[in-house]
Length: 298
Image (cartoon, rainbow, N blue to C red; front, side):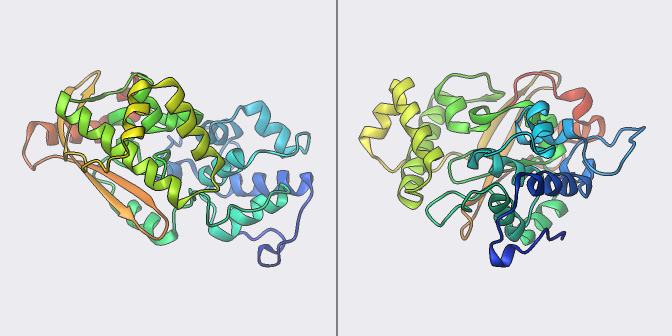
């Protein structure tokens, strides 16, 4: 996000072998540049495309596991792993489905949450590079982000699984750079619970969503209380304070854009022109993630 190859025949649902899966992953990795996914290009790259270490980092899997997948020494990756790989590789809808078929899995149906970013939406995100941007799915799992967002909130590429889920991070008390007042916290919690309840109705077949909600109800007394109240919470306020470890507090406006037909949330942070926070964002854009991304992401 600093923001087709067609293997076999995705239109006709051919199921591949483990070797086919490894070859496809390798080819898709080779065609994607680090700059396209918000990673530093660096020097002394022996081959074009992403290194295995970079793809593993983006997808939240171990390098060893990715090596075994590409070499055909590991089979039956889970739908969650396949979805993470499709997201990290920026696959199209046809390629996404083909990846699942190569792994011997049925592509996600209409009752499951999609993590695919449509081409037109991705094109729009690529053109809005002057603000910190991130994309979340219907369960508020982080799907994509640009370099400025990582510089502001911490590099999320090293996070895995639920470490990339906003409700889980909040209700389990994980470290975060977002600072809430008491009123903001209450509104945020009601909004998150309400949106997860809506998602449960929209995606009844999504096992990851069901598991997330069940575990949140088990580990968070506050979440369980709000879930049982079944209230439709008001939308969050637009003001956010981000506590950056080097730049201090940044007072930002948070705008959430919903992409209805794929249920993605585009989150953008902006600041008034000429404000102190706007100047800090400019500094972040110049210095970049390499020097300003220490601390706890999300």
